[in-house]
Length: 501
Image (cartoon, rainbow, N blue to C red; front, side, top):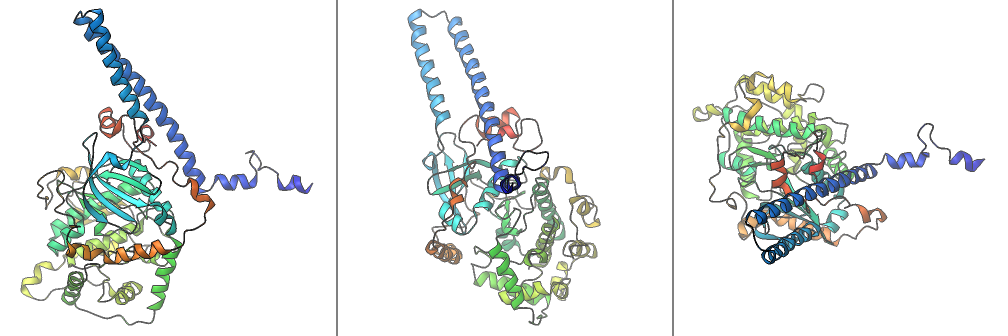
């Protein structure tokens, strides 16, 4: 009787209790989706290949018949035709490898790997190739974040999010080959321009709102937005990238670390500084310390209070972050930046006291004073969660954004258009052969060395975590899918079929 009670199935579903719990786990759900898409794509590609092969044979027969060639000539050409078909079959079976990409230059350095400008040898496609160590990702509990980033990149074809061209892996590394966005990140543009005019700030923040809205439509919250997450394309418009933290839960260790830092400054007094002093201080810190905000942990300057405290949150946390970025556009510094990390944490802890309208007194600086409607827009974004904007429609209806053509923003002319020599121009990225530029990454490199010393976890579940990571390994390829009208989004007919595992 005891055995019977322990193995009683759940009423109406035919599953035991432990089986239902297992089926509800995020890992099993993801692998179920991966399996479904795998078979959809497998048969889509197979049927597509068969159809194309029949078309090629028909054209071959029609061509040879039209030329009235002899039997011996036909046999010779048919043998050549069969050889070409064998080559296509071999390509379909071939797995993507790193040596199929020609590395042109390094364009990025993150906490878990490097980013290179590369060209796929066979197709000539230019891409940004992100290379990450499996062991490092496992040690830092970042595997799930990389899988989520890969899923987001394959889930949409919108021009507002950076597109994934290929994803593949070998024994030691995982690779994401993404579209190359040559204008660099928005931080570089912001550093060069300083304070933006209100009309320029409106243009860029509106595009960022649309980017984030596309991510929200997929069901994801970014939670760690900052200017570095937005890239400038060849036409001057922005794209959102770096979705590593856009998942259901932040790393518990990171949450605890942020709670500790907030707790340490709870008794600190807020330092009141003038607008000009804060602006000058922020720019001098960035100029003196090139590693500022370029660490593995990242900067808290733009993070919503509920994320920092580990409290429940909604999509509105991304609107807080965009509000902080918007403030920086108009003021020249983030709203809660301080002269030291401790001062920044103190400002975040006491954000209602620190958030003040930037004011300039000197006649030459009066042009930087915010209009009433612009300041109202800022305070609708940097606000308590209960009163904060949390949807794009709320933003669109604010008077500051009146007259913005939201339906087709990419058709408009951008205030800044990158001056590019070619599709492989890297002028807007750091020069990784320059000691000065490499100084920015000293902290990242040091943390990578520390991670390498960390003992590897003995995780029996780790064996299958990278199942379903591969994307675009064979089949029609990205360009052909574009021509056929198949997207990478969810919800359209054939949308899932364009994702190749």
